[in-house]
Image (tube, rainbow, N blue to C red; front, side, top):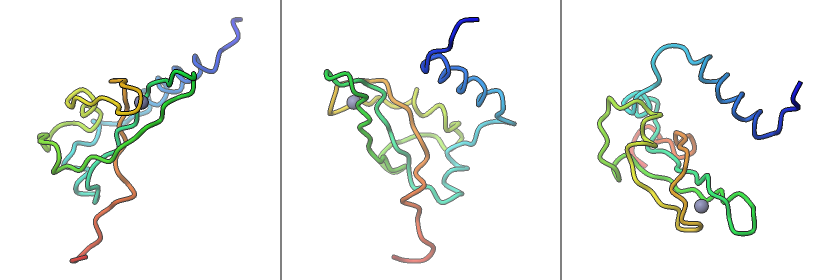
Length: 106
Ligand SMILES: [Zn+2]
C-alpha cells in the first residue's frame, strides 16, 4: 500500500469533513445571526522561501456586498482577493469568531 504523504492526508481529511457535513451549509444570514461580523480571508500561497504565506485579513460584511442567502463556503468564489504579501489569489475563508458584536452599544 502506498504510503500517504502529509499532502494526501490533508485531501482525505477535507473529503471526510465534507462527507460529514449534514444538511445545507450555513448562509451568510446564519453567520450574522450567530453574531459574526465578517470573515477571515487566509492566503493559501507559498512565499519564495518555500514557507506557507498564511497572510490573513478580516473582511466585514459591510465591506462586501454579498447576498445574505449565499452559502458561507461560496464566499471564496464570490469575492476577488489578492494577497498583498505573496500576490496569490488562492485563499480560504473562515467565519470571524473573534470580533463578534457584543450585545448593546459599545
Ligand atoms: Zn499570501
